[in-house]
Length: 235
Length: 209
Image 1: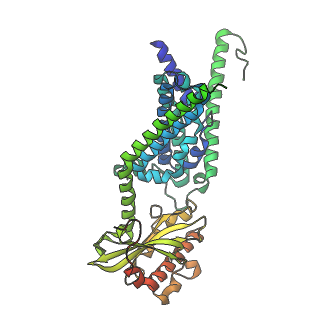
Image 2 (image 1 turned 90 degrees about the vertical axis):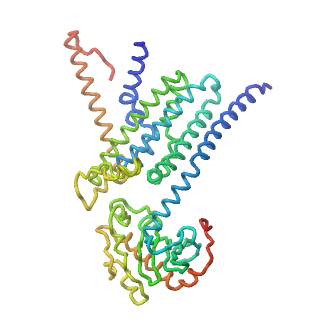
Image 3 (image 1 turned 90 degrees about the horizontal axis):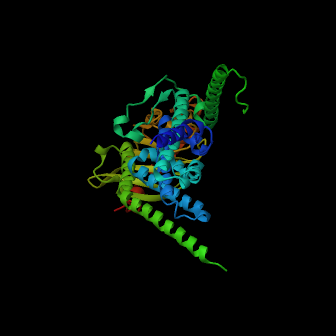
């Protein structure tokens, strides 16, 4: 069973870090940049995308033997569109205020290339349980970036965190808002779309910095071990 | 010509289309009532904010008419509040066309003495952090309309302070509050001029019973 464990571990690292749909593949940027003005909006869209990814991946994986190669794309699109519509109806019914806040970006999950990308690249070639896990970690990776960016923009822009939590969790969450600092004049740059691009750029830069620090540390360790300079030549 | 794969592929596509559409139809059936409830609850909550529940004993959302007026910014709904069958107030929807970015939809509650009971912005695309202070969730500015009485002679007061009126503008944003104040004043003027007609027309809107 260690084989399965290794596979799951690889999938987790890929989805959350090495091949993160938002930070590395840069897929689904339209909803990512548009809705992340607050943490809760980011969390809401992140969860919706996560559910669609898991559902679409499992379904694509289950039906993969019956779908001829020539028509796989229209079939995948239909499956994804069905899941998105179902999620939209459910959000409309159960989290109505969040549905109003996210607006057009729920149906736009259909156009999130991360979903059809995973269906095509992974789920259509793998058994359902692995496809489900892949969808889960990819969705989680995407949702985490949405929450991070939303949290950053909300704190810098409006000085609050978790504002509007009752939209997602109901009335018990109405006093969850944390006021980091009081301001009458919000920092517009962070709230408006340019703030999303700048924030996203900073997060990607941070990730690349961490990667390069990690890489140089691994390199220097291997140098002392093998006593040979330049083990890896690739950039 | 080999038409085998054509029909096979067509059949598979059709099968998927039927299954996925079926799933959506099932979800739609399952959530339909709940969604209608949510939309109604939202509408009721807003109506009750601009017309106090103590003021009326009728179902506001079913007692409404559709009117067409330039002053209100196009086709709008008017909800009548009644106590013992007598019309004692109205909630009038209006659209400000001169906001900073796009239309500002609002609803104005007013009683028969032309005293404002409440104003709420329903939908807008104003700049976050500046113009969006017209929303109650952002700022309580919109409450400054409460209890103000409109008469044709005090129309000059229904402006932002910059224009010589009594309502605050926002730092860095005058256009949005100006648009809202002017539309509220227009709505009140319209209500006063057409009160009897608005009060007596039979219900004819979507929610009417």
